[in-house]
Length: 334
Image 1 (tube, one colour):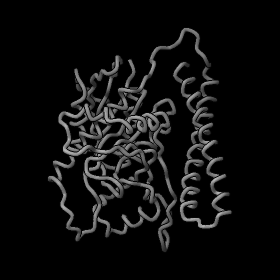
Image 2 (cartoon, rainbow, N blue to C red):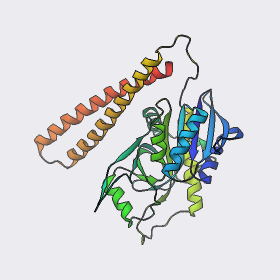
Image 3 (cartoon, rainbow, N blue to C red):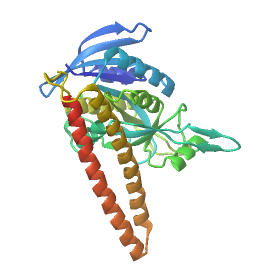
Image 4 (cartoon, helix red, strand yellow):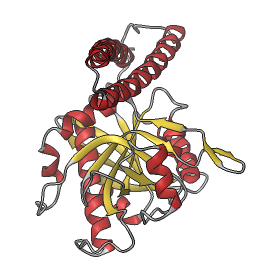
């Protein structure tokens, strides 16, 4: 039976995840972490799912992620919870993180010099999240129909050790200036993905519901509901989308009679996959900046050159995606 682990930081997030599981039983890790193990069945496949509430902060999330991987040996790892919206999003929207910036990484001298630290969600899970984001099927997993349909974004987020609540804070301005493609901010995703990175056979992703919007202190825009109500709504939406992603995944837990690759070949495949993923990430970033440059360029000659570069990068990305998908299928059959 395929196995997943879902970690949360807060009780409201935990209860939203828990509501999707059946036959729950409590277990205690030798180091004291309390888990519940349950069942989730969908699309003819049943998953064994371990869940835990691990508290706030990147450091704790990293420790608990590694501990849960060693304990459950899962195929899939999720961090599900709430986040503050930086731009583009509304209360109740869901963000599946393509990557998480550790925005407090840097060098402190007379000034702070950022040294970007990144945690990447698994390519396969990001692609599945993109597919489900285009549909509305995940809304059926909510216990009641929302007054307005939440949207799903598959985009970067930022994570640090601070609660960012106002646009007037220096940390907010720093995030917008240094990580301006991040659309939400939270406190655990970077540590979680950093720990998962050490286990290439475990696919991990961060999924967040937007419970608050970071605004100017003097903004008079009405905010719907109390803080508790917004957190509960965001947690329910994030959990519903996470379980829709899980429902659409297919993981074989059976070993083939004749393994396709031996252990040495498997290690080489993992290394190749990591190399390709790194190249895909770099080319994806380059493509984004080329498109931004094209949008502001007025010269016809330079526009033509930029268009040619964009087409080349798009072609290279498609080739990388095809090879990554091929390697993914090799892993599943090995």
